[in-house]
Length: 173
Image 1 (cartoon, rainbow, N blue to C red):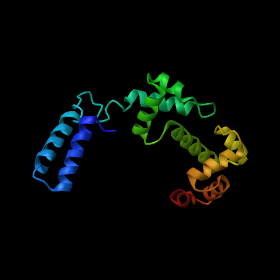
Image 2: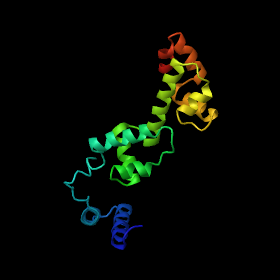
Image 3: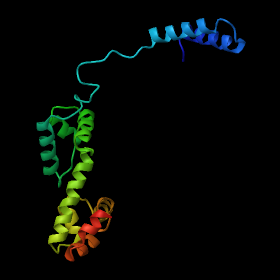
Image 4: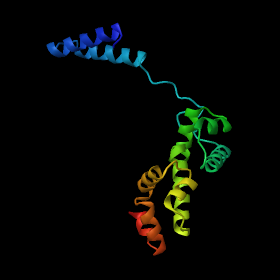
């Protein structure tokens, strides 16, 4: 919704445009002057907010967050708890973590769990359901869906390919 004065100036300009009168230049000038006076850009800030500096995690916060996330692979993960340990609000922490790593905290932790599952599948003969449990998944179905989404194949196919040295092909597809 336009302010009354802005609306009046725009109407005057429209009337001048329609009539192609001599007042077109003055009406345009008045409208531009009004817009520049009332709708100017915010003043630049020197606190780093525009450049994203305030959003980023400090190196110690990123290390601490990754350590906490890695240590909680088998337990319930609460992002608010990780954020609190880093001295940030949950929402600020989530945005800053994503800026620092390219992944949201839960996505980062999920990738870590899938990487661990890849190692277990390649190096052992444990049933897939057990590998899923050891990596913190509630059930085999959830594990298989998550694994397939990130690895591009099922856990069983990954295991078979790792035994014949074909996991590079799977990882690139």
